[in-house]
Image (cartoon, rainbow, N blue to C red):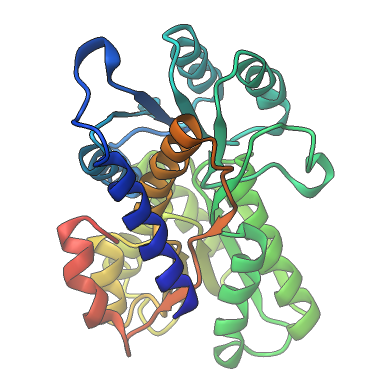
Length: 321
């Protein structure tokens, strides 16, 4: 309840302050960029884009969401550099690769451009080396542990599971996988295989089928986002694996929601990514206009199961969850 109240207070404050002056236009209008490692073709990032756009409308600013067609850190950095060159009033970016982001963000801050991180942070060993001002997103490692713990009652001691990663090397997804693996090993004495299934749905299904054929004792598949969940759900349906191989995932979109309803997916962690786009623009606006310091905001705590899926399904369909 306190988190909800705090969110409402911040959003209302931003909108009230925006209303102190008539909406700016042309050269006087503030411009903020939110740059992700993948564009809105990914259902997850389409929701972030909606949050960015809605915040821009509420505040009367230009709010631009960008991302490569597929996971591409160099292209993401180029977009960030272009936003700097355009003299953005603030930039939010996902820290997709710790080694790639220290220098661009340091340069932006040197130019007086506020920067916040969204969606994923650098690994613990790099923490504090990248000078963004706040992090808006889910604690990926803890979320991985939470999802694994949710599955423990349905898994036997010594169970073998697989984590299917659709963007190998992505720090946030790797942190989720790490959290899952640690819980499976510590609490069950089990084994976790990590599998690069790529972002191509057809390839992903083929890779998963080959893995299950070579490892028929696999008890569960953990996918770490929609681009992995969607092909996995299709494979479980097509191959008649419902009830034979368990599944859990992260992030919500219509296919995963339906799979939860149908009993194919045990549940999914919801990081409420709409907030990552919306609050990034709000925090950047408040800093650029009123020098209010950005603050960390944990967007992801909920776990969607067959028991509560109907309550969020309409919002997923509408593009808010």
